Length: 303
Image 1 (tube, helix red, strand yellow):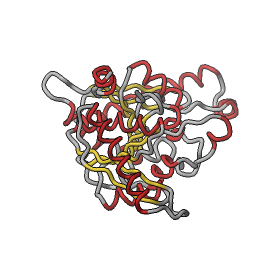
Image 2 (cartoon, rainbow, N blue to C red):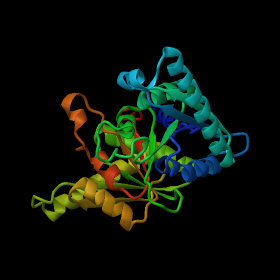
Image 3 (cartoon, rainbow, N blue to C red):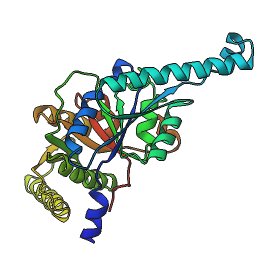
C-alpha cells in the first residue's frame, strides 16, 4: 500500500501552464516560472513551459454596431489573434525560456481548461488578480473559476514584490479528506524542491474552555498522525505548529511570523448556492496572503 501511494503521490512536475494577458498582474508569475525551471530542469529532465492568452468573445450587440459584415468581423478576430500571438511570443522569448505559446478566443476559464487537458499539464500559474483585475471583489472572475474548477494545482502569485524562493512550505491540516490531499501533495512538492515542510493545525477552541491535559493530548495525537503519514511517504516533516483561533487568520499570522515562502491548501469546490460565497478558509487565506498560495484540487491526492 505504501509503495503504491508513493508512486501515485510523488509525481514529478514536468509541464506547467501560464495563463496570461501580459498585464502586470499576470507577469508577477514570471519569477516563479523561472524558479521552477531552475529547480526542476536538471540533466535530461527539462520542464515544459506552455503559455495561453485568451481573447474574450465579442458580444452580439458590439458585433452588430462595430462591423458592417460577417467578413469584417472574422477578419478583425483573425488580425487580433495574429497580433496577440506575435506579442506573447516576443515577450516569452525575452524571458530566455522555451515556451509553447497559444492564443485562443472565447471564455477565458473554459479555454484554459481545454488547454490544460490537451497538454496534460501539472501546474497552472495565475496572478492573484489574474485575468480579471477585480477577482478579489467579483466571484465570477476568471481566477476564481480556475481555482474552484481546475483539475490540476493552481499556483497563485500575489502582485506584491517579493523575493522568489521556496525553502519553507506551510501546509495547514485538520485531518479531513481535503486536509489529507493537502498533506500528500505537500510531501511530494517539498521533496521535489528540497524544501522544509511545516504543518499547522488550528483548533477553533477560542470560545470554549478546554482543559490543558486534553489539549496536550490532542496535540500529541495530531503529531503522531502527521509523523506516520510523512513516514509512509518517506519524508520527515520539519515541525508541526499548533494554535487556536480563527483558522484563516491564524494561518496568515503563522506564515508571516515564520517567514514562509509558500502555502499549500486544497480548493473548496462546492455546488449550488454555496459556490457563490467567498467563505472558505482557503479563499480567505488566498485573499489576504502576501506569499504565493498553491491550491490543489480536492480529493485528487487523497489516498
